[in-house]
Length: 171
Image (cartoon, rainbow, N blue to C red):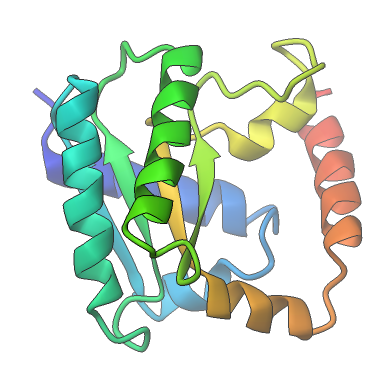
């Protein structure tokens, strides 16, 4: 049986050996190395229970000083959760964030083992930018995203560099 610790270790391994190693997110290395990331594993498969956990989790993260927890991963331990069902949950998580008025504090990024951008084939290299070992919602602090953008890193450049990198890796 896969434990929460195994899932977290697998997620950390993916962040370090894929996201950071290939510089897919130039802003990931600093909080990862500073151990400012938080991980929460959800065992439920019922959407209502998942969304209830998400509500509690983001509320708890909101109360933590950003110098202690930069951003977080809400990880679903449901390997059978299909991508389309996951997207429905992700959209509902965004609604929860708005309903509890934390959408000015956090923004969400989706990751799933079968991630597929609209208009791409399943095996298109660009999809691997958002493919993770488990379905997960990355909870980012809006302030930190804005600070990262202010560093001068052009988002368009990141997207093109990622496309080039992923084409080399999976094309």
